[in-house]
Length: 584
Ligand code: FDA
Image (tube, rainbow, N blue to C red):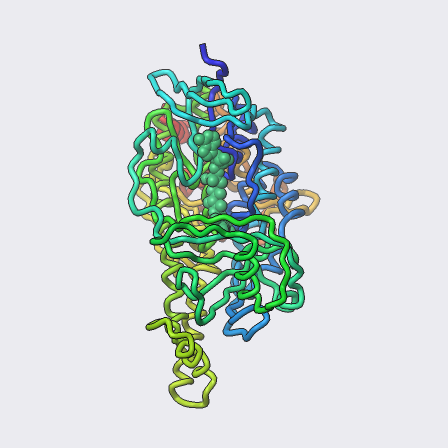
């Protein structure tokens, strides 16, 4: 007899595990989450929180979204991405980042009802975990996953209760391995990976010090320090990252991965901080220090039978572009509704196959992007003359040369400007964050061709209602004039139909098909004197189908089918589509 029985067991209370738990509980699915430690993240690793993640949190409830904004550093403070010799020293360059450039800001505002922000993981995890527990998740801390065995009916997982030292078995229908970059679940299930672990070494130095005088006039979350003679790891660059403005900081500094990881004691941490801040007298209050490795690997299969992996368990990469926790939360959004539908008997198990089909390409994309972003610092080093040797005086002379009034120096300055501007692929890559489109059995295109990207797909989000894409955001208005995003009308754990006044038959069909299939389908007829009105015409321009057409969204707000106009038999059409998507 197992000690505990549940529908879904989740290993890990990080962003992936806690979001899965919060969503499953919101959908009414019994779940247990475990963590080998007694509490949540104790270092502020992830921080950049993008709009798509905020949409997931908004879908969990306005109180969740609001708590994030309350604790986060506002987007307006995120964006003066500075390159300098030290915080006290000469500034080398700067670029507007994270949606704060006026053009990018407009794109952000047009794309989503949410705002990018900077929320350290130490704040994010408690919000997600609390939401999960409040809504019914049973959490067990100090409980370590050891192994699992799956059969036709479910999974039996063996854990170690670290409080008693005793073994514990948990029986579940499904197992989610959200157990981070050293995932034992992925290893035990022998899931296939491509790429390499440990391609670089980094250390985190987490400390308190008031650095206002160096930064408050150029607010940013990231300050990149390029120094000749940077001797740890030889990468010539350190990162001073703001945790709380402007008195809590995290320095990220490299070490040579071919050497043993250094012991970062208080003396070493103080030395590094003094060097990067450029103040030999600086006193820091060291909170903690640790080392970590840069990884470049992703799972090509994110599930096997009843076992699923997500987050860092499936995609392991450097923090560049700030994609890790964001993608982890978005993995959970993809899987949770599918698992809920299967557990409740609303969908066949084959629906779960679409998880790996839809998310494994995203895992590959973000791991590739994050590692490429590290490589794209190269042209900055080259323009500064920091490559081609370790001779400090020579590097210093090369860097100084850009200040001359010569054609060579002008060329050097141009090269530096170009190299820095190119870093928008890391620091302002809205498309990478927002453009995920799925092709799987959980979408039905009826042969409609995927639209090409008119602009660079890494930099610019392109809205479309092509099945597989997330529903475009447009503001609609209720009878009091209050505004609601189309994303607010979708989601919430159910399928939703959007149609216009000419498409009432779709709304009627939604009710009939919902009753027939035993699922809830929400329907919105959008138009004058309806519950939601498109006063601006933005939705009419975005929907890519006519007024009598129909757009069907999944609980994760992705369009799964659309039709331009009415159908001879809308009930038959909707039944065909939903039985296909739900694998019935
Ligand atoms: P995560 O590692 O967070 O959680 C794993 C969980 O599993 C933990 O609760 C752990 O205790 C538990 N666990 C592991 N093994 C277990 C076992 N055997 N039994 C029980 N429990 C077990 N991302 C981002 O989106 N934006 C950003 O700006 C940054 N910035 C950033 C900076 C730095 C310096 C780092 C190092 C990382 C980032 N990241 C990031 C990445 C981000 O931190 C990372 O992607 C997420 O934490 C991944 O979340 P997961 O939930 O997948 O794993």
